[in-house]
Length: 402
Image 1 (cartoon, rainbow, N blue to C red):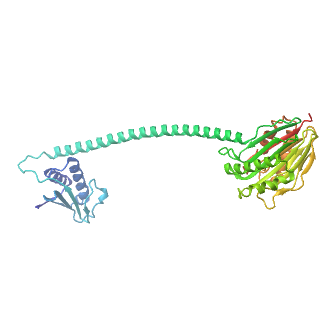
Image 2: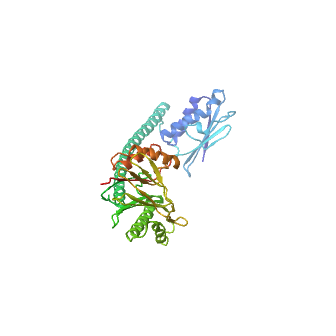
Image 3: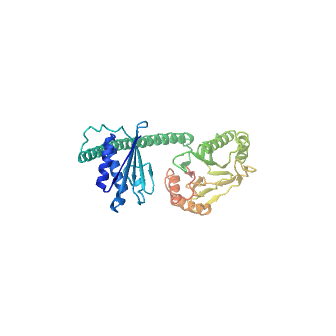
């Protein structure tokens, strides 16, 4: 491996020397141009200060490597990151490049002039820049196409999500309707009900009701509020209503049904907890019996506007010592309104006492409204502000006297 060197006093002379040795070893024009610019920048400070720069190069034919060393005595040395071609090593007064290269060209071969070589380097740089521009344009077009496809996919997924939500909601509404007993007909009574889930994504919950006519002509109504929300609480509420219906149709006394229901369900579902309100109404005489298991009291609003809560005593399903005491009895007169409900109606503002007061006001407001409008209108008035969302059930009964 033969080492060659020379000394340059000007930037132009250094550039010519580097260009010539690079062309001699068949470096790519773009690589050659970067090496020329890097050498000129590395030695620039020393040459401007009147010092000379030393250039040394050697070719290793075994490794196919060209080593170029630029010495700038007294200079602090450039930063490798600042040069167009990163060097392998930078010291205080020396910069070293090692480049893959070919063997030296035949000396007899006529070399192009410096300007021709510089023009060749410029064309190579421009070609590389054009290639980068074209690649950037291609990538940009691909990105725009990808973004367009992603946007279209998002639109499709959003539409699909809407369809699924619609189908899901329809299925749940059908399930909810299947869980609610159909409206019964009892001469002398008007009945209506309103149910509102705590969340639209789960239109079933633990608030459930049941009503049917007993063989003696009296109307039985069950209101259940099972602990929790969603399908699990719905299952518990269904178990309670089915047990109550069975016991009522078997002729069990009203005051015994809550305790007996707890006895039946406890072996199968030890976690069930539910408040229960049972009502029996004779449509002919207006006589009313109430049995309670830890449930909010029924509200009785007389036709003359007087109102009071019918607070029967008892403890709910799953509570300690479950069961109801002696039923509370009352007699309804034509035009009187009886409202049975769950705590979601009166506790939406987290104050049940204040909620019971507002419930009386709302019931007064809709006392003379058609019965099918009463429960929903009362619920709407009660839920103008909701601080504690909960499943809500409101059931209205009016004695017509017919």
